[in-house]
Image (cartoon, rainbow, N blue to C red; front, top):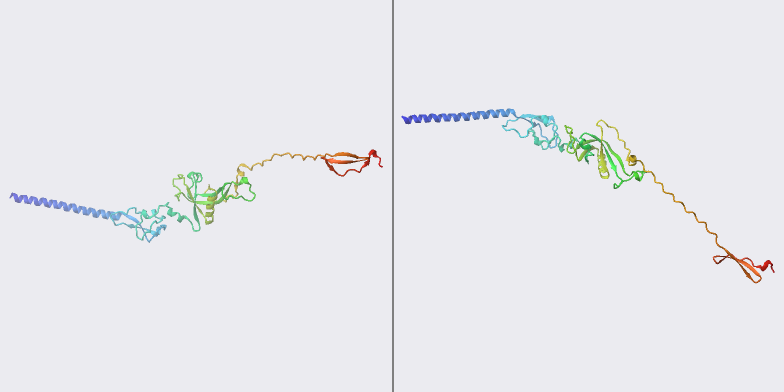
Length: 306
């Protein structure tokens, strides 16, 4: 009797444990289904409506929003179309593929620089320092004039006709009203307006102007003159010489050297010698003991001719 009771109690306990296990498994399954259903309705991502090539700029008609049915979110998936519009594709994106941050270039990425160059224009970089970039207050979108200073010792430096040696040092305007395309690695101004010192400034120029800038960097010192954003007037193309700063040098007068008087030639010393021969005499002139001229006709001594 006792054995039967023990068997019944054991069977009841086993049934209770089995029922509890089944209940726990059922609850887990229900919870999993609920989580899966909740997740599948919660994730929405931006996807491509067509194939997008690398380097292509995304527009609104290239994008759509899709529901993500997986229980796992997409790492870096973009959920709002406006966060992708205007950016460049770093890699090809297939139609229907979820667009992620890894597939797009950053808004200020260098990949976007070629897209900012209009047809027929060129971008050229010039080296600057803290003075040339205005202490970091030169931003993309600024307008500048390009100046070049030529020093007298510059190789190949030539002077315009009529320019004096004193004015070999001069500054000229190479280009005017030129747009700044980028400063350093920034293609858009810092929203906070914080100045950033850069070593390179990229300008938007025509092909002819690009050659002028390249030559100016080789033959002189290039400076940038910042313009007012609304100033589109022409720059004065007159060259500025050193004499415009400190004035022309005063010509130095030479000390007059008195001319030595031309010595008057001395009168030749002439000696006359009277020679008497017998009853006649004649006179002979001598210069430095050398007979000069002919002797006078002989005359009688005493002045009486015979």
